[in-house]
Length: 302
Image 1 (cartoon, rainbow, N blue to C red):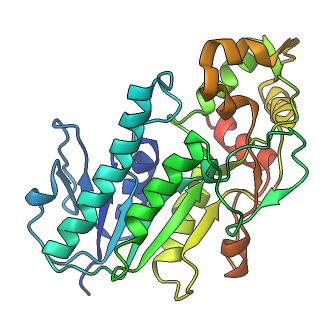
Image 2 (image 1 turned 180 degrees about the vertical axis):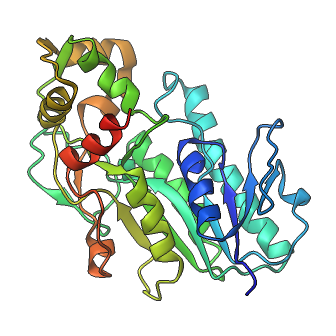
Image 3 (image 1 turned 90 degrees about the vertical axis):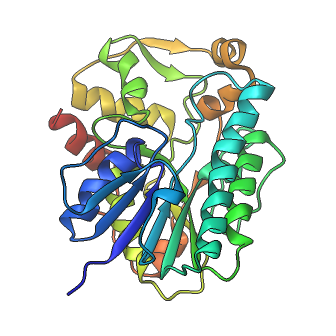
């Protein structure tokens, strides 16, 4: 039987570094797009490319579009905001235009987005939870996601599914090491009120959900990829401290982050609870539904 081919953009990022071995192990052929020019593969089913023009085949069964610079790195100057938009919107636009030029219509395109779409709770009450139908907000993190999603969905002849990702926890990168560092150092625990949501998902559930959505016939276009358990920052510190056998004692007031990061401090101090309503409605089962199971697996293997 001929192997199915998956094109992955943003393939050298944190999710990509887990996604490629997952796909290869499951007998897919993978074309991996990256801006890094030094990538090469010894695996017969993995080809690295730095532009769409280097792709020789017409047979692309699935696409996973993850391209985009890290939203947490570098302060949000107006120039940086433009970089963040361009890295997502421009690559997504080029991807769909190239598919159209080549007359390639994959069975499914999974295009990335984030729960930043739902913005923040200005009242800092956090007593509601967002699902896929909750409206977006007129703040940068939400507008970034809106532009990214709209670019993909305007190519209506393609079968696109949008995945709004929470913070992805896994080994070997992502933002988790930075979140754990103050706890490992036995220093800072609570940040601000400690009541702000930490909306996360284990990397293995991201990979399983992507493959699950490949062949879903549902008309639903948007899926929240987040764990079903609601967790706030204080609970995150409590669970991580227990696993790491630490007792961090310093609380950091929110003004420290507001001074240092400006608008970007929203990523740390605010947010919204989000639920994976559409995924669960299709019967998807999470391997890591709770934070203690997820962090236990990641940290005990460290």
